[in-house]
Amino acid sequence: MSAVLIDGKARAAALRAEVATGVAALVAAHGRAPGLTVVLVGDDPASAVYVGSKGKATREAGMISGEYRLPADTSEADLLALVATLNADPAVDGILVQMPLPKHMDSDRVIAAIDPAKDVDGLHPINTGLLVSGRDGLVPCTPSGCMLLIKEALGNIAGAEAVVIGRSILVGKPMAALLTNASATVTVAHSRTRDLAGHVARADIVVAAVGIPGMVKGEWIKPGACVIDVGINRIALPDGKTHLVGDVDFDGAVGRAGWITPVPGGVGPMTIACLLANTLKAASARAAG
Image 1: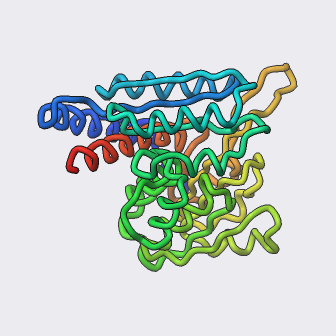
Image 2: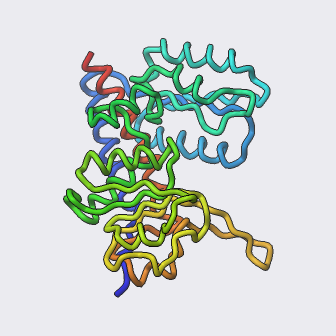
């Protein structure tokens, strides 16, 4: 038995095509394209590459891409003032402040300052509350993408046993809420969980988002399980080069799982695609009044 590789690139391309069609319809109906503005503070190389990718994808979907690159020593007050300006700008439908922020800034305060209706990262406390209560809101992009991949693989997951490894506000907690809302039975585990192997062995669905390379051993996986690996860890090779690995021991898991996401090429492409979908959703809601 060898797992079916879940092609995140193909699923993301399909979602981006759906978004582009929706953008064209919105432009035809209301005379303007959705606008997504990304704010980057500092010069973190990985964040800069990611912001560039978001801008390119935004334009390819027919949206208006805005971008602010602020120096690392920007004051929190100045960042909050920019957020307030974007909140009030009718041409901006989505606001994304790239994380992590410099240490002198309070990321919770900045996120809370974003208009919840423009919070396309889905991290505002209001959107978090809507998700936990099972109501409609803007959902964080990575777990939203994971959910699309899970449902495409398994269909109806009501009653399935799921384990989410990781409890971050970005992935773990919203992922658990999405699975719960879909009537799965959910265990939230983390690096301090006792008998993690036992929890994983019972799970029909495993979502690993803990940031520890190879933490989930292949022999732990229940035969036929759906494994979603959110981890992106850069590992040094003996020749001085590096390569990316996930939080799951892929080579060990691929022979036991029913479905598994590769790293890279699995979850990663879905994140930007879901960001575009959130921006279209936010723009459509504002256009509807």
